[in-house]
Image (tube, rainbow, N blue to C red; front, side):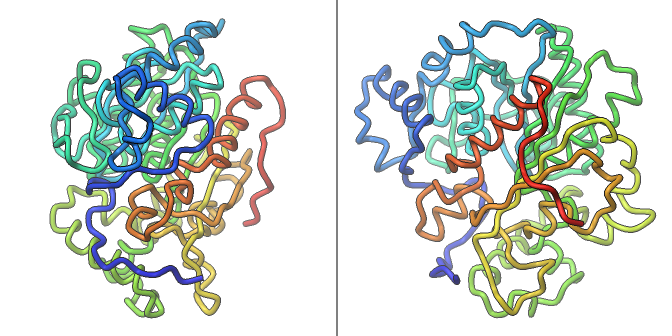
Length: 386
């Protein structure tokens, strides 16, 4: 299916949105927040959903669960060029989206599952998180105090640098919150930063253990538009698909301000004997990994390593199909006909339920995997075919 293209695609993670139709568990949380703010649920239908009391609405759930015996927590990591706030199980932003456009739905679903959830701060500049313009897409405000830049992922910078900052953040959670074990949930490049941080935590003797890794739309083998922008793939790879061509144009503009991440979305950087993935071998040997890929955009005649893809990452890349089994020996996969993010869905004129970062089934998939691993059961998902 080729969706009706919307040629105004621009900066997919920070443009203005209209409100979504909320998924089940999120609707209860977010509408509770709206009610506490004195707003009616109908207000969410014409603007980005206000979640000013979302933390309050879920605090009863998380408080009743309390800290787990081994101080285990879920850490959500957002992706490329993201601006995402630091939140805790009981504290989040009180205006706009409680944890930004990537993390809010995941955070709400995991909190509703009685998880202890933190979101890692990310900023697309070399600084602590700066709250965005209230009219921008995924805006948030009145958040917990921002953490220093050295604990904040530079979201358009180098993968390993982001991993270092993320490792500092996790050690901070150990020192201040008593966290000793974490389950990563990484969207897009957040999955790569989580992998880098896992290696760094191990190599530096951190007291924090990694219990599992879930990646959602992560470019394990590169991102389609960047591979075209930097000449690794021809523009004809888009097969005249207008959405694909528009995204390439957007990423061409984005690349002008790139601080290192763009060129690391290439297969030539990530793959091969000297590639980034090869340098991570052994890091995930004992860690259950769940890979979730989207594939809303399809072209039957397209290269199966490219199509279907979610608008930024192919399903092939998101499920690490070209990587050797030892990259993540304990892996399972899920595939959905969804877009990369709520912005991509918005620009295609779709409900936010069509996005990997908001869809009910994906939320249930993520929480189910994390819970199963924590309880010592078999990881959920299907086998990954390499």
